[in-house]
Image (cartoon, rainbow, N blue to C red):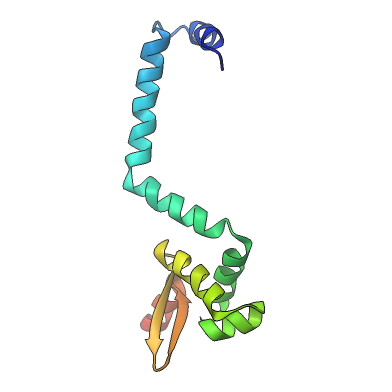
Length: 118
């Protein structure tokens, strides 16, 4: 948006402020949002689920806990590729890996809580 169009926009709002004041106020709001820990957390979740394969992994884990090797076979890919996706989902707080012997079994947080409380 050009500066003239922005000035025109501000005038139509009849907010009694200059273009610079308007931008300063809204830049401050934008920075507050970007620095909010809740926003950062939501962004991690959205980014984690924006990938089709990660979203499918999440949907599978909602139904059944699985290890990396089972997911790799299911998706016909390498353990390393699945591990990469699982790490992103785990960092976003969507899944939990629980070591069971040689394997790490991955659960959604909700399914793990259900197992503990049953």
